[in-house]
Image (cartoon, rainbow, N blue to C red):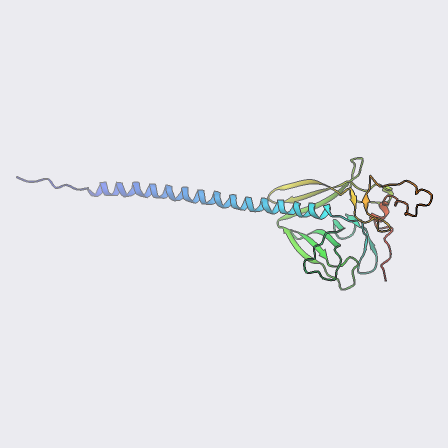
Length: 244
């Protein structure tokens, strides 16, 4: 009696191989898709963190703004807060420059922001009044930047491109900062300027809205309270001469 042999035919083997090939291809495509999504999410997260860091640095700088004008390398006065005047869209003086090594230097610092190519950069001068050979240190904050704009917000809420001496004694209350990038488009943020004036004429500090303007009593030898900071001091029209 003849026994029947058990096993797969060639056709069945080919069909099984085709099925496994299709499953393997589908699994590979799914794995590549998941990896691509993960990579894109990582890039988005990194870009978002860089954006948060950028506005955090600008906010920190402006929160320590100080109304102290400077002189450039040619001896010409520059406004304490310069918006869209000169080379940089935003340039100002700030305090709070940490000195952990206790070097013989001031805690005041001059800061500017500009777009160089497609990079938004922060420039720092180690001295306020510059010499001819003074060069800033450059820190790149963000790449793929298309535009960087700054506008001044006055106490009445009006926005303007520059700070002018014709504005009288009104100190700006905030700055509107707009950054346009390839990834995020246009992003705007309003940053309040400090109410506290760290440096007033005569070296007196105080709140610009709550200073004592009363006359001294007879026999009181205290100096009268300083007048509000004129905007001309900010706009660069009345910058004190450099101390010798």
